[in-house]
Length: 112
Length: 117
Image (cartoon, rainbow over all chains, first blue to last red; front, side):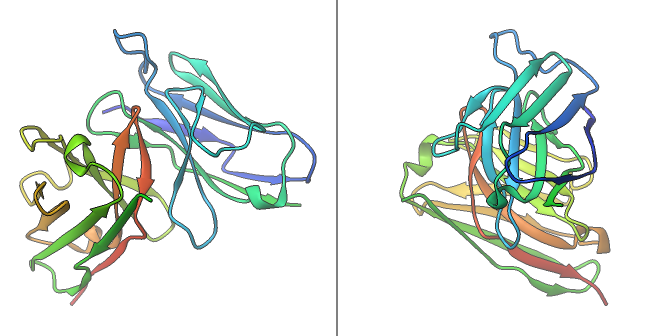
């Protein structure tokens, strides 16, 4: 199975400042079709997870452009260019390259 | 508007069974793979199972293989998870989610399963 790791586990942020979360996989998430099967999700307090980024770098519908995903192979990054108060919550990466799909352990983002 | 509404959770003794349902609306259910994901106490997300659009392919996490069965009824726009031989470690909030563009793009609100004597 592909194991996903994330860092940091907790990230206190200042509104208006940038933030970055790292995700790593134990094997490449690049498919032979050229797509990279790595997604990012945000779970706001009291809500279900919501999709932020799919296929490594594509913003989901309605996601603000302050969120961006990058990376390739086994190393990925989610960046928030200027954190807003509504961005607090748990951030997860997930691989959908192969079953069983697997999630990272999560990064808790809160306001300093 | 896409909606996924889970039901069927509850308190069950170890070794017991439950059937979870997920009623889908607002999209062409029969065109999408569907997934079940569990959120355990402590908030970790655990992928459980997936099924393709016509139910000819199913996959499971190793921890539930042989005990859980995923199914769907495209005529009723409903996804199911049949859970047998339940264990304490199956406890959690179970979400159904729609698969699109290589990701889980819509999630329901979840239904709680508690396995305890």
